[in-house]
Image (cartoon, rainbow, N blue to C red):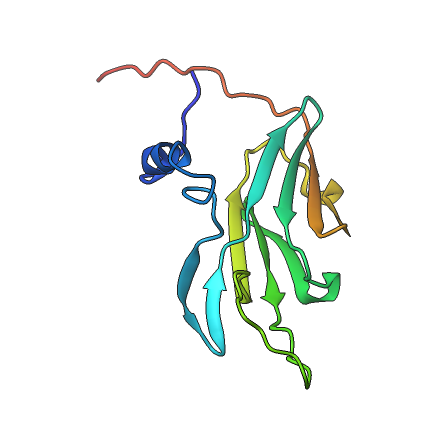
Length: 146
């Protein structure tokens, strides 16, 4: 039996996916930040036999503007997508992309080898590879009642 992390909005997310591709999968705005809003870029988490992969959509974000950190079983990806400067003679009629700071945290299972974590950015997608190692599961322990 596998335990699942409680995610109170998972059912709402699944419900909204049926109405429109924009609902439930949109990079949601978070709290106001200096100079804009924080947003949460979309991510895929893939489990393979020998690794986990996390793919985060980060178009127009330079790899120098992204940090990937691992601490106490949590992988954190944070950075910033900077607002493009308007040039003279140009009129912006609509802006639908999100700009500002972002941060995503992923709680990882115990079988991740932190020494082998590898990240690369290509074509606007950050891919983090998390190799798996064998972890010995504790055996059930019978407790004597006194």
